[in-house]
Length: 130
Image 1 (spheres, rainbow, N blue to C red):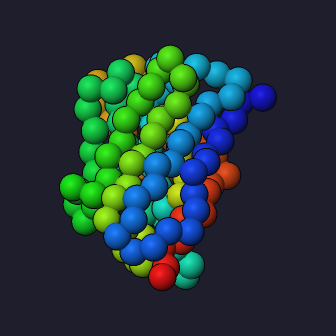
Image 2 (cartoon, helix red, strand yellow; image 1 turned 30 degrees about the horizontal axis):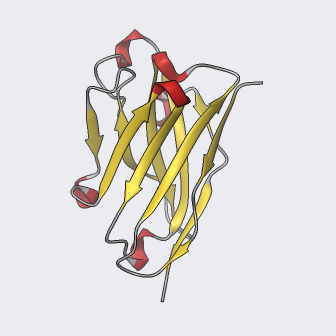
């Protein structure tokens, strides 16, 4: 069974940091680009960051640049999202998604087109609160 499993979500104080993990089960992420998305209560899902399959290119939502960092460890079949200087408005369920194909080897998929992604995880909750 092909699955993406997110982990690392937690309750953290404003200004704190978290590292989320997205691990593939049943398939190898080597040829998949990975995107992170989030959905806050009452809001639409939004793109956070994505990384090309070979890891050479990343993109971020403009509002998150400088605070979030995406990385890929193919040996561990895992993609990470390092989040720092967290704010209450970062509270959301965070999802990862995988996009397969040579189109994404050197260029990440869009953060605004869900159709470019083939597999989605179930999400991990991040709550930023004092």
